[in-house]
Every structure is written in structure tokens, then in C-alpha cells.
Length: 188
Image (cartoon, rainbow, N blue to C red; front, side, top):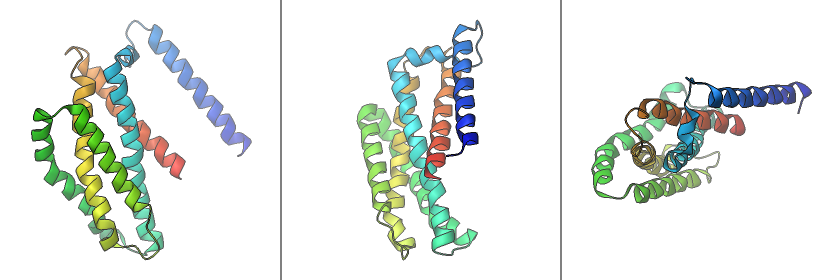
């Protein structure tokens, strides 16, 4: 740990605290942080943050593994990783239909559990792991992502008044991106 990195950490922590303080006191804040006092929205933001860590972290690690350990080129990496995206596309209509009929909390819990299983299965990869061994973990994660996105979004934003939704939606999505950035930084 270098002194410079610790200094940057202290500076960013201080800047973050100053931003929060100023935002909470402003008559017309850039980001309406008071929305986080709504328990459903706060939990939704936490889930979005956790999803960002897992989602962006896994999407970061797979190409690194495939390039540097397996020696694949960009096209081969894309073909291997395409499985997750195809799984998401196939699952999307099912997720929308289930979201209308099943309690969002149950779908969210199932989605995060399935996502964790998919990540856990990837934990057993060796230097010899390639497409065949990555197939099912990617399918599980791709299916799970739709249940980690749609129901938590409804839980977080569904109870807010229409005038609060645009700002809250931005904050909700920011939490996922922030989780991804922090997750990648921790992994790296």
C-alpha cells in the first residue's frame, strides 16, 4: 500500500462525504438522496449494487482468463461469452410473464440464488477449462440476470410517486454501475 494510494482513498472519501452533505442540504440537488429513506428503494439499490459486483466482475474475469490462460483471441472469447447473452434473450419473455404472476421477492431471491450458483460453478475452473465447462455456469447466470434485474427494479421503483421515479431510476442504475466498478477494482 503506497502512501499515494492511501492519500487518494482519503481524498475520494472526503469528496464523497462532502457531496452527500451538500446534496442533502441543497434545495435542488443533483441527486435526490432522500429517496434512499424509502426501505424498498434502499433494498433495491443494495441488490442492484450486489448484482453489479457479480455481473461486471464475472464479465471482466472471463475474457482475462480466456485470453491469458487459454490463449484465445477476441472472436473466440466473444463466441464463448455469447452464451450468457443468448440465455438472457431467451429468458426475458419468461421473466416478464412470471413477474406479472409471481411475487417479485420470490423471483428476486431465486434469481440471486441462481446467479450465485452460476458464479460458484465458475469457481472450479482450471487451466484446462474451456467452452464446454463454461457452458452451464454461463447459462445459469444468463437466466438469473433477468430475475436479478426486472423484479428488483419493480420493487425499488414501483412504490414511488411518478414524479420521483426519473431521479430514483438514475440513482438505482448508478448503484449497479458503482457496484460493478468497486467489484472490478476489488477483483483486480
